[in-house]
Length: 371
Ligand code: FAD
Ligand code: UDP
Image (cartoon, rainbow, N blue to C red; front, side):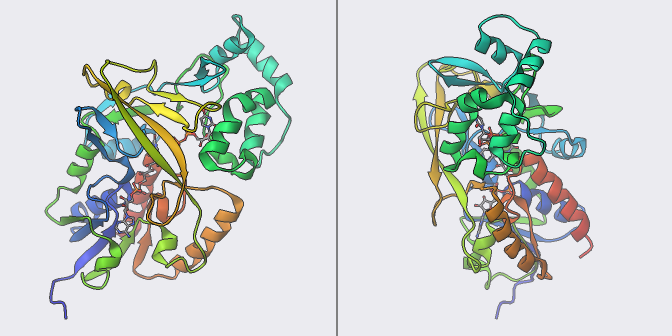
């Protein structure tokens, strides 16, 4: 028998979903919370750390915080100060850099002379394929800019990233990328764009540093589910894994990160360069452009899309009609659980950004705080 006093909550996963819920439960609802993560660090995929050369890197790919939600920004601002950043990226193809996402500057590069928003709008009206309700990632792009720009910037990048044709992916995947007829050259359109001034990991340390929160790292749920007493469970891992893949595995996409440190201040002209048509990697990220670190060396990270298999890292749910239906079976089963909440990107199988995950944990807390 286990005589330990039960925790009010066991939270599986120390990423944004788990850490925000833990903080709220401990601070506002005065609950005793155990947070576990099978990785040996907090922060989930948003974790960052310095490499051997002192360069602060985002461990699992670039994490550009952005939001239109004041509530989320205000909440996180209790745990961090911010460094405002306008995320700017370029695309490399046909042996040169292109402004990306597509805007008036890109249009001028394409036609090889100065232009105007009016001319770009009129031209896109001729190039675009009229589709009333774009149903997939091919249709959403060709309905805005036509085949030529779709093929130049989207078709092969998407195929490489997802190992699927854009027409087999939800419109929301490529639809995330703005297309503009002005000179706004930011990658993202949200009103607030900033990076935690001392990094994400420091933000997580402050979120979880609470007398009613205990954190155990390097600890898999499976190892302790029967030995640690708790009243309620919040699970932020893969929902299919939680249910032992009873309806079959959900598809995920993984990545391989290849780092290279160079004895120079900067390697490339932007924090991210996308490679739609060259190489096996999709992008090279030099996050130093965003963190503002002043160092004589730099580290770049090449990002190679990879198949996901057991033991690997499930970075992306794959948004297709078939995967949504399979997920729905798991979601139905999850609804019948009285004492378990499924939150976050993997447990709800959504291609969520960080602010969306924070928002959903804050909302979930409102539902759970009296339980
Ligand atoms: P996670 O951060 O994945 O945390 C889940 C945690 O649960 C993990 O640490 C995992 O180890 C742990 N876990 C799972 N199963 C178990 C188990 N059985 N036992 C113990 N622990 C377990 N968002 C943005 O807003 N801007 C960006 O620029 C951005 N870029 C991204 C780039 C990449 C390459 C990726 C993959 C994601 C990006 N995101 C970005 C999304 C962002 O990472 C997610 O929104 C956020 O991390 C989700 O938080 P989460 O807590 O739901 O999941
Ligand atoms: N995309 C593309 N070309 C690009 C950038 C993005 O085709 O140069 C598509 C691709 O399918 C990608 C999706 O748009 O997966 C979303 O891009 P984002 O940069 O938001 O991806 P993430 O940072 O989430 O990997």
